[in-house]
Image (cartoon, rainbow, N blue to C red; front, side, top):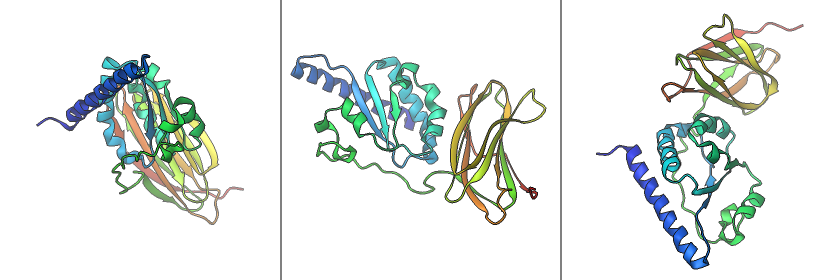
Length: 268
């Protein structure tokens, strides 16, 4: 039997060919060329738990680049969750640069943008338009909704997590974290193949959530440090994830390699 990625590719091609036929039909009806589509992506519910769909994204991106390079007018991603920049950072290199420039993201307040691109009567009511047609209901698993690890950092302590990349051509580390309550000091350190020690690449004080990424060209190791030593009374619970894209193998890795907790010292 054929693989899921192959079946998805066939489905993707069939959908695009159908849309091409719609464009041809509309061109005849309106007596003017209609050759591009505008796409709205509702990203509500998207999480790191959906990262395993990357092979399907890779397949569709390759098909679009080879067969439908100018078919896309724009993509507007709405209801974008806070983890989306990190997810997108891992797959954006697969997208043609011209296509990347056509993608915009909105958590909310996207109504004006949609109305500039699409006639009000064609925008679904769920997105602030006047179209009464019901949208299909996606099947989204809510188990482990955001796909993040959880760690509690004791008061007056710090905690660190590291991940290593052995790819000779390096890759891209991406990270994301949030606290449901309170805040924490946060630091990102990196050590390349030729470095003796870790070097600080980002340092933030008393933040509740953050996402970022770091590109590198040799094997290396990244370290995230959550510093709660300034808190004398309160422990902090952090939800986090480190993701890795390997340049040579074009594969992704998730999870951690080393975790370490250290007791903080009182600051004078």
